[in-house]
Length: 267
Image (cartoon, rainbow, N blue to C red; front, side, top):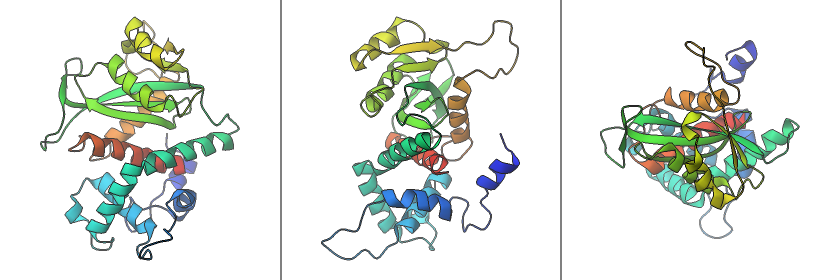
């Protein structure tokens, strides 16, 4: 919800592009960026400008070659992006910032409970893996995310939309269960009810799932405890092109989701 405090916090006036990092955001992220290598050519490109360029692409969905000229050459940005992607840099930064943010709020660094949800979106015409979600009547991909109970991103996976929620949930839990050893309780909606998901999660430990249901007599929108924070993350991502319709590839879409939440955590 927009308030006078949050408006100032997310104000982008004075930035070259709305996607650029603020000085405060960069001060939080900079310590986690790769150090200069001892061997080889000296680094000539500022990492902040490279990250700004990557955020610009994630925000606008433009082609690499269409990157504005006031950024480093697109081949340089592309090379850094692929190296950081393969090294899992964005996931590492999000992990560290998540722990720091929780500790700053007086909470345990590793969450013990999370909220899981999914979102099916249409894909672009560029192709890539996709499927048909019969329940949502959407042909494209499905995003599965887990947040902590305050809404901070814990993990995200992207897969074809015809993958059932109980199966997609297993993919995201498989990716995060070792990073967060105390996370064993999930809040979810009714599509995750039943023994299938519990059986799928049994191989990752003793998990419990709490279904948060709408009131039987509720009409229209109802703010549901726990679930609304996770759902808000998905809705915000959908409101930002190209995340609103999906990237041409699953990997790039997952990276785009991570970058979207990276800035939110850096605040």
